[in-house]
Length: 164
Image (cartoon, helix red, strand yellow):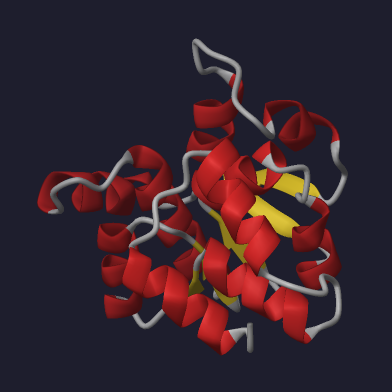
Protein backbone atom coordinates (compact mmCIF):
# COMPACT_ATOMS: atom_id res chain seq x y z
CA UNK A 1 0.00 0.00 0.00
CA UNK A 2 1.34 3.41 -0.99
CA UNK A 3 0.45 6.16 1.50
CA UNK A 4 1.38 9.84 1.20
CA UNK A 5 1.01 12.21 4.13
CA UNK A 6 0.70 15.94 4.58
CA UNK A 7 2.22 17.56 7.67
CA UNK A 8 -0.71 17.57 10.10
CA UNK A 9 -1.23 13.81 10.66
CA UNK A 10 2.47 13.35 11.42
CA UNK A 11 2.92 16.38 13.69
CA UNK A 12 -0.27 15.75 15.64
CA UNK A 13 0.41 12.06 16.24
CA UNK A 14 4.01 12.88 17.21
CA UNK A 15 2.74 15.54 19.63
CA UNK A 16 0.81 12.89 21.57
CA UNK A 17 3.49 10.21 21.25
CA UNK A 18 1.51 7.95 18.91
CA UNK A 19 3.30 8.32 15.57
CA UNK A 20 3.82 4.56 15.50
CA UNK A 21 0.15 4.16 14.58
CA UNK A 22 1.00 5.22 11.03
CA UNK A 23 3.64 2.50 10.77
CA UNK A 24 1.32 -0.08 12.28
CA UNK A 25 -1.45 0.79 9.83
CA UNK A 26 0.51 1.46 6.65
CA UNK A 27 4.06 0.07 7.18
CA UNK A 28 5.56 2.97 5.19
CA UNK A 29 4.57 6.61 4.69
CA UNK A 30 5.87 8.92 1.98
CA UNK A 31 6.09 12.68 2.39
CA UNK A 32 6.94 15.28 -0.24
CA UNK A 33 9.95 17.56 0.24
CA UNK A 34 7.73 20.54 1.14
CA UNK A 35 6.21 18.60 4.05
CA UNK A 36 9.68 17.59 5.21
CA UNK A 37 10.79 21.22 5.04
CA UNK A 38 7.68 22.46 6.90
CA UNK A 39 8.66 20.22 9.79
CA UNK A 40 12.45 20.27 9.76
CA UNK A 41 13.22 23.80 8.63
CA UNK A 42 10.62 25.56 10.76
CA UNK A 43 11.84 28.34 13.04
CA UNK A 44 10.34 26.53 16.01
CA UNK A 45 10.36 23.01 17.36
CA UNK A 46 7.82 20.90 15.47
CA UNK A 47 6.62 17.53 16.79
CA UNK A 48 7.78 14.81 14.44
CA UNK A 49 10.70 16.79 12.97
CA UNK A 50 13.30 14.43 14.39
CA UNK A 51 11.24 11.40 13.42
CA UNK A 52 10.89 12.34 9.74
CA UNK A 53 14.68 12.63 9.63
CA UNK A 54 15.43 9.37 11.43
CA UNK A 55 12.62 6.82 11.12
CA UNK A 56 13.26 4.49 8.18
CA UNK A 57 9.56 3.97 7.47
CA UNK A 58 8.98 7.68 6.72
CA UNK A 59 10.46 8.43 3.31
CA UNK A 60 10.83 11.82 1.65
CA UNK A 61 10.12 11.87 -2.08
CA UNK A 62 10.42 14.72 -4.57
CA UNK A 63 7.51 15.65 -6.78
CA UNK A 64 8.32 15.23 -10.47
CA UNK A 65 5.75 17.63 -11.95
CA UNK A 66 6.60 20.92 -10.23
CA UNK A 67 4.50 22.78 -12.83
CA UNK A 68 1.39 21.01 -11.56
CA UNK A 69 2.26 22.08 -8.00
CA UNK A 70 2.60 25.69 -9.19
CA UNK A 71 -0.71 25.44 -11.03
CA UNK A 72 -2.47 24.29 -7.86
CA UNK A 73 -0.90 27.07 -5.80
CA UNK A 74 -1.90 29.71 -8.35
CA UNK A 75 -5.45 28.46 -8.87
CA UNK A 76 -6.48 27.37 -5.38
CA UNK A 77 -6.94 29.68 -2.42
CA UNK A 78 -5.56 28.65 0.96
CA UNK A 79 -3.66 25.61 -0.28
CA UNK A 80 -0.07 25.64 0.96
CA UNK A 81 2.99 24.15 -0.71
CA UNK A 82 2.99 21.03 1.46
CA UNK A 83 -0.63 20.27 0.62
CA UNK A 84 -0.09 20.91 -3.09
CA UNK A 85 2.99 18.67 -3.20
CA UNK A 86 1.23 15.93 -1.21
CA UNK A 87 -1.66 15.94 -3.67
CA UNK A 88 0.63 15.89 -6.72
CA UNK A 89 2.86 13.17 -5.23
CA UNK A 90 -0.21 11.05 -4.51
CA UNK A 91 -1.30 11.47 -8.13
CA UNK A 92 2.17 10.74 -9.51
CA UNK A 93 2.59 7.56 -7.49
CA UNK A 94 -1.02 6.49 -7.97
CA UNK A 95 -0.95 6.12 -4.20
CA UNK A 96 -3.67 4.23 -2.38
CA UNK A 97 -4.25 6.89 0.26
CA UNK A 98 -3.50 10.52 1.09
CA UNK A 99 -3.39 11.55 4.75
CA UNK A 100 -4.56 15.16 5.05
CA UNK A 101 -6.62 17.11 7.56
CA UNK A 102 -7.14 20.52 5.99
CA UNK A 103 -10.62 20.80 4.49
CA UNK A 104 -9.67 22.72 1.35
CA UNK A 105 -6.84 20.34 0.54
CA UNK A 106 -9.07 17.32 1.12
CA UNK A 107 -11.75 18.78 -1.14
CA UNK A 108 -9.22 19.42 -3.89
CA UNK A 109 -7.70 15.94 -3.53
CA UNK A 110 -11.07 14.19 -3.72
CA UNK A 111 -11.83 16.30 -6.80
CA UNK A 112 -8.82 14.59 -8.40
CA UNK A 113 -10.33 11.23 -7.46
CA UNK A 114 -7.91 10.56 -4.61
CA UNK A 115 -8.81 8.55 -1.53
CA UNK A 116 -8.21 10.80 1.48
CA UNK A 117 -8.42 10.28 5.21
CA UNK A 118 -7.46 12.54 8.05
CA UNK A 119 -6.11 12.03 11.52
CA UNK A 120 -9.53 11.13 12.92
CA UNK A 121 -9.93 8.47 10.23
CA UNK A 122 -6.50 7.13 11.20
CA UNK A 123 -7.63 6.83 14.82
CA UNK A 124 -10.81 5.01 13.80
CA UNK A 125 -8.84 2.61 11.62
CA UNK A 126 -6.31 2.04 14.41
CA UNK A 127 -9.15 1.04 16.74
CA UNK A 128 -10.77 -1.20 14.11
CA UNK A 129 -7.41 -2.94 13.60
CA UNK A 130 -6.90 -3.39 17.35
CA UNK A 131 -3.88 -1.08 17.66
CA UNK A 132 -5.69 1.12 20.20
CA UNK A 133 -8.49 0.07 22.56
CA UNK A 134 -10.36 3.40 22.52
CA UNK A 135 -10.32 6.62 20.49
CA UNK A 136 -11.58 9.14 23.07
CA UNK A 137 -8.41 9.52 25.18
CA UNK A 138 -6.28 10.11 22.08
CA UNK A 139 -8.81 12.53 20.64
CA UNK A 140 -8.83 14.43 23.94
CA UNK A 141 -5.01 14.47 23.97
CA UNK A 142 -4.96 15.86 20.43
CA UNK A 143 -7.29 18.67 21.48
CA UNK A 144 -5.52 19.43 24.76
CA UNK A 145 -1.86 18.86 23.87
CA UNK A 146 -1.63 19.40 20.11
CA UNK A 147 -4.28 22.14 19.82
CA UNK A 148 -6.08 19.98 17.25
CA UNK A 149 -9.34 21.66 16.33
CA UNK A 150 -12.49 19.61 15.98
CA UNK A 151 -16.09 20.77 16.17
CA UNK A 152 -18.36 19.39 18.87
CA UNK A 153 -20.46 17.73 16.19
CA UNK A 154 -17.47 15.98 14.60
CA UNK A 155 -16.15 14.98 18.04
CA UNK A 156 -19.46 13.29 18.82
CA UNK A 157 -19.67 11.71 15.37
CA UNK A 158 -16.17 10.21 15.65
CA UNK A 159 -16.88 8.74 19.07
CA UNK A 160 -20.17 7.29 17.80
CA UNK A 161 -18.34 5.78 14.82
CA UNK A 162 -15.86 4.26 17.28
CA UNK A 163 -18.71 2.84 19.36
CA UNK A 164 -17.72 4.96 22.36
